[in-house]
Length: 247
Image (tube, rainbow, N blue to C red):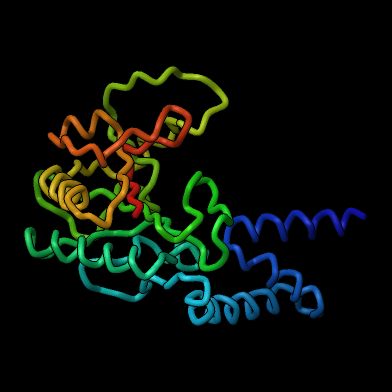
């Protein structure tokens, strides 16, 4: 009974995190060396997902690319969260190349995108990354005024907030966490406002972009006015640590 409960929790947790991990764990239960079998099976399923995803209208962002567009961490690749539709992929590469042309040497980093299979399958903790048409981008950062390529303040690109005024009440429970205890752990880089503003204005002008989520205080700080750049609301995670874009 207890063993079955433990396996159920593992399956659900791996499925929530990676979409395919739960299946790999169930298959691994047939083997004596369960953990070794899980690692091998997950690796096979991970590689197979790249080839199967197009059937579901998804394509993988490259985990090895060294050009203007890169995945921020192997974590997102390893957890199978680096998939988008072909149209979203084209947009991301076009946008990264545009920023690189304006500011040579700029690297645009992708954080969470989507899982490879099934529209409507949630990519937690996000509320909307379920159709391949959404992706989160890291901010650009500088150190003492000098741009740092492919750098983020936190190890995963999220949760290093740019503080500013907000009208949201502090209530609990909420997805609008402040994580104040973590803020002192992050690198003390400053936001590269020129690159970030150019990125956002370029995205806002692109007809393929339907919506961009950003905290209002950053929209004001960067002098942006497009109606596509919107507040996600007080009930969702803060968007002054990353940029959410969707077709």
